[in-house]
Length: 214
Image (cartoon, rainbow, N blue to C red; front, side, top):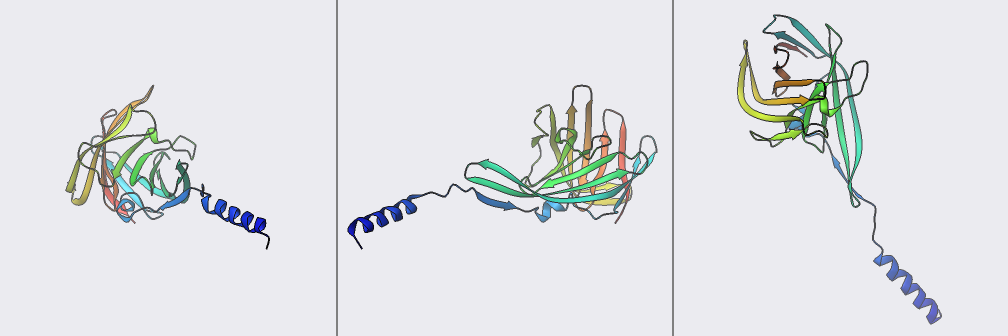
């Protein structure tokens, strides 16, 4: 082989070795079991709540479970593929819909109402009810508006509501300071049960879980 060809071949090999792969590395985040315990339920699950102030009862039914994956580009060389899960629940009294939402990369569960007559959900209308590794006083922004936030105000080893005792309960204060709708709530979320109590400080309601039917 002529020397010029050998030189060309060596040059090409060196160029190939020096080339950098700009393809982003993909990290896959599944939903951790400890997170799923606060926001993953079976279809047809029912939650029966009582407003201890008015005496009104309401039953929530899990109507839809969606599991999907989302690709997120953190930077040029770092790409995340995150498993996301949503459980849509519906009030049997007025049809209002709420949603438990969690994504593998976040390690958190959000709970919030959905837009009327829509399948859409917006974080600014939600409460972060659980986040892995949290401690008292942690504050989380919901959506992009710093005026819509959740704050962890307590972690209870156990909590008795009526005749039932719940364990590993997260107490979270949430404020939606929206343009025309300021709303303050305190949620209590228990492992394997979801939201067991919601105190709405704005509308003076106190919904407590009476029964969960799986």
